[in-house]
Amino acid sequence: MSEELPDRAVRAFDGHDAFDRDGRWFEVTTTRFEGRVTADETDDWALGYTLEVRAPMLSTATADEVGPAVEDGWFETYELRLEDAGMAVRQDVEFEDRRVFEEAGDAVAVFAFEWENAGQVPGIAKAITEYVEGTYMEGVVPGYEYRPPVSELLSRARSGSDADGGSGPMPL
Image (tube, rainbow, N blue to C red; front, side, top):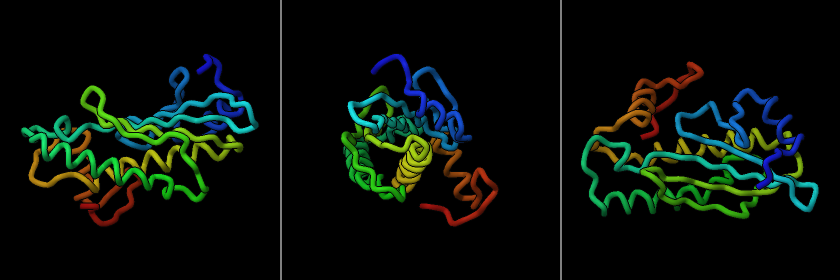
């Protein structure tokens, strides 16, 4: 990665209210999990984008002891469910890299893709980040006492409200 961000990516993310710039990265501000995206030039007109979403591993998210079999099963399921992340957007995004790994107590999801229209990418990145958070919450294992931010998301889901003041059913 070069130190310079492509101008058209900077304009696109600066013009979208769901992102704040942090050096080479644009952080998603609409989720409780850490989502961030960066861009690089390619040999073609398209820019290369890397989206990274960090969520707590099950054992990190709970105040309780989580056995290795439960954590492994939860992680495998989470990883499999994220294979469908491209369905979160209307565009046909093909990931050059899509992987989930554990790092420092987090489940890190990485999505790399190229896209020609820089103005569409903030919406794509936001939708995928929100999909990752929603997928995580759908996979929360009942019977544990959860810590923030998972406990806060569960509370919000149980109360039937979202950050925009809307309502809907609890996703569990």
